[in-house]
Image 1 (cartoon, rainbow, N blue to C red):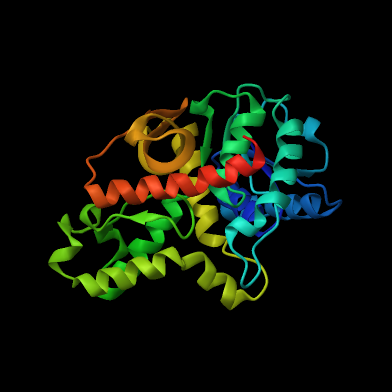
Image 2 (tube, rainbow, N blue to C red; image 1 turned 135 degrees about the vertical axis):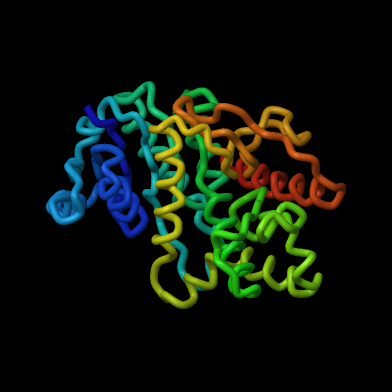
Amino acid sequence: MRPKVTVVGSGNVGATVAQYIAHAELADVVLVDILEGIPQGKGLDLWEAGPVGGSDARVRGTNDYADTAASDVIVITAGLARKPGMSRDDLVMANASILTDVVAKVVPPSPQAILVVVTNPLDVMAQLAFAKSGYPRERVVGMAGILDSARFRTFVADALKVSVESVSALVLGGHGDTMVPLPRYTTVGGVPIGAFLSPDQVASLIKRTREGGAEIVSLLKAGSAYYAPGLAVFEMVEAILKDKRKVLPCAVYLEGEYGIKGVFAGVPIILGRGGVEKVLEIPLQTDEREALHASAAAVKALTDKLGI
């Protein structure tokens, strides 16, 4: 029997996540949304793609959270997308209401599930889901660092005209303007990028990475990124269901690691069947540590506004 993954929200991100999971035959997927007909139509379309893609995974669209019962993983993408000129923080109050309602409906039927939060502002919504779900911290994790690191890798590879597969990168902190790309831990063929790029070039790539989501929003005019976010979520779900114990940068609730307590922040973790198997503490220089603390403080300021 295949695992079961629920994807809440049948918009671009949610539908793309469902597509990746079903195409890889990783799990059966339940696509749930408040909109009538949309999840059913997209679910049927994805299910009918199975014979072409060689997948027997079942995709079902629904408006009924009872259909999500006994999910192994729950991916929450529901929420308002950013519009041009809007920061992730502008979304906080509206999406907090949406996420609170979703968690109240999706958690009781799946008490042993692992929550993967995608709704923005990511770190704040992950903390809200953690507070409302009653799950232990190991089973609530936010998708952020994988996407941000992928953007950094893309821009570095393009600057050096090398394969993205040759580039490894690490981005910590919040998913937004306060993210902390780490050039010291970003390598090309195992060599730090400082050997190939000037400080000004690195700074320019970091700036573009921080503004990566906004750049796409400004180009699309309506909506936000979904191909790269969807594949980043897929990597997390795959690591969980296959118990890969993969080292990935994700948003997790810190309990003293890196000198941060009581707030979600992006850090390297080991992700496996139990969710967050371990938080990895890597050595940080003073400026890097200060930047991570500043990022966590920005998240805490918003969670304080929500009273969580």
